[in-house]
Image (cartoon, rainbow, N blue to C red):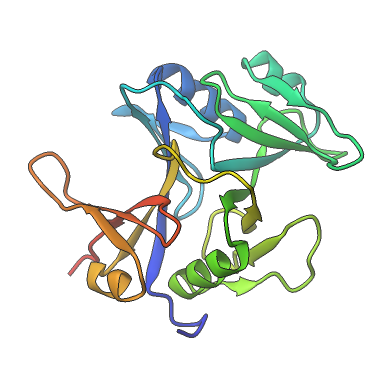
Length: 230
């Protein structure tokens, strides 16, 4: 599939939350998104696809997030004031801060000179992977994304090219397998048949309480597929 002919279109990012209002408040301030007046856990950005949905779930966080956000900020003061904590500081291996939001969800903060403390800038989404290059090729074909032309700190990265509300979709190698449902996922608009032909798996079909398909990529990462509007 050519990068110019995507099978799927990015629709939104979704975050699971044990304390839905608290996490929505945090990420609205951290990213400068506007809570929807009718649903303050639906966060709206300024461009197409910048929606963030914070979804209440009954289960507590029990494992490191296999999908996380990276944000750019001027310093850490703003994030700390919102309730974020530092899990790891820059060292010989990394030049960013590994942090946790108020729900314990990991994310990374890149301090950029000249930026305001808040709001942060949504920089990239990072996915832990057994085979990063295979994952990048699979999602690149689905979303019509090109591989990163000038690799920097990423491992197997796809450039947004204006098709995502952030700069890069990155896949990095980890030794541990996926064991629980991801607490961060994304929604796409796509034909489900085309997705399954490419190797996606249907986990749940539309029913009384949902109008979309819950699916998984080749490494089991959940995502939701909404049918194109006719």
